[in-house]
Image (cartoon, rainbow over all chains, first blue to last red; front, side):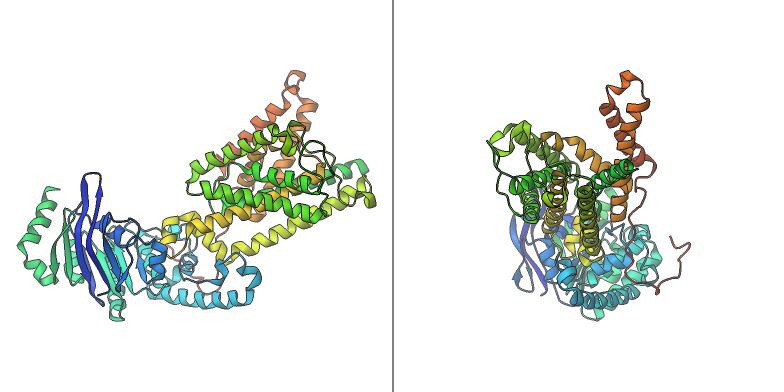
Length: 254
Length: 323
């Protein structure tokens, strides 16, 4: 088990956004987290990534209790995330965006550029080479010197994946990777995710698009009204009347 | 002729001191996105502390420590840094506009403290009787001013080189990332609160250095030197020069100080007598107009921030039509 929650709950006022959620993410999977609008997906995602703190319950990463830890500490422990609406550092080049991510950079300390110049430069060369490799991997190599704010929305999602990869995370949480991205880039993105998965990385994908999840994720966890209503393989999910009812019913109403 | 040169030296000294201050603000705002609306408090802390530490004995308030001048100047920087540390711990959680209001309040409080706490720094009379360093050797004339200018210029160059090396390093990259999107930076393992505080203190130390030099130049500092006007002037210099660009910051300081001085001279010379009475106020209107006009016409300033491109040669292919 790489990630697990125990009775995780968070309320906003009287609304139980996440209600005693216990789930498990197996190592080496691409786990899909689905649910209709307002099911609590994003809140759960924010609890897993440290952006929100739960009222009760616990989150564990590889048996370590990470409940309430800040996002920067979680990244250091090997948990990477992307954002629903891509958040590039707009007035920085694509390459700089990626070079920012590695931990433990000597030059990030204020004294680094003055006292440890040689070591800093050597480290910078390694980081730059790795960043260029990662950019090539996500097909953004030719855009390395472009301002990150001026690439397309889909390219920004690829850039976010590249940034996260620089930290060598074990687990990557993707928030609606297909939302607002043209189909060609979506295929590129999912291709890269599957390739990384074969190399051993675990993914959790929150996705509104049921079709996308059924095709690319296994197992699948479904949320409705803050609760887990289904946990199992994608084949079982497709055959599950409760899930289809909750999901399609809500979609049809909404 | 010597009169003109003498005036130019005087002008360039003031402009260079202000340029150092603008560089300090640029680290905070241009690079890190911290809206310091109380620039003058840190500038003033440097000026007051330098004169109190390095000056002769004063009746009725702190001072007379007679500390070796470079150490007094360093003390001024430390005072500004300490103040930034305390203010930073209290206010840096605030976002842009709130941070601006809070720091503006700090500057007003600082001015009022200096004006009223006579035991501390002489109140409205200010700190007087400061013995300028090397005065016995160089006298009070043109030579002294020339030497002082050269020293200020060297300090300006050193400050520029220090910041320039900082902003092209991974530290500078980190500052820009915090400026662009704090939450995204935190999701990549960075600690925004810590970085913001470090940038705020470092910028304020540089503001304190500028203040210390300013106090030394006039051998006097009073609450009149720490009015909000100076904050606006330094901001105008940064906006016009180009926030995020250290060369722009220096250029803006010289340009705006030149325009300020020239407008004062032109008003006193050519304006009708009834307008001359309000020269100061007219100058404020002018500087306000310059800020507004610049923000509308060229918000990135004359010398805009340049994209840091850390590798050259590999990606010359343009991707036209890609987006």
